[in-house]
Length: 158
Image 1 (cartoon, rainbow, N blue to C red):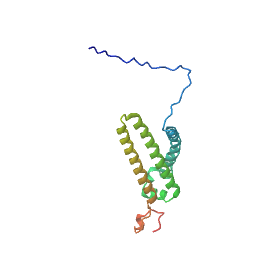
Image 2 (spheres, one colour):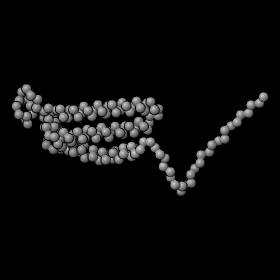
Image 3 (tube, rainbow, N blue to C red):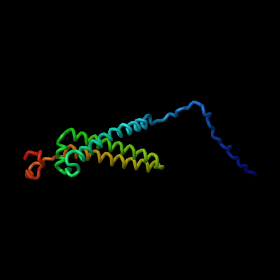
Image 4 (tube, one colour):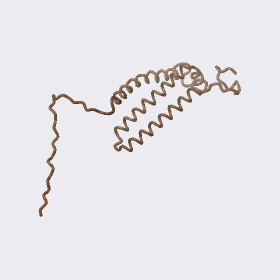
């Protein structure tokens, strides 16, 4: 009795002609990556305006860095304009950064379980940071009640 081994014929990849029409593969992800790419560009430009505006007001106007203290922050956050400015900066920076780290995780985590775990931890950290930052911005009280007048900032009525 003889056994013959049959080897599978080698599969040679076919190379399309250089001028052949490109056929786009159907994906189930839709345009998520495209929207993510566009968001990164738009949020990056907006973040440049927000961050440089923030730095200019905090470091160049008035006494500069030496004026930044509790009263300075309290005075800024007593205005709804600066609360919304800082809120936009926080939200855009966190979403922009989270999206960038998500891309790095997708590129470098080779196993599905590791990739999923890292992304869950990333999203959890981003949500916690955004929620806590938002709470700080909107619940910050620069003029606490019951404090001596000499400890309160100048804009507070005693």
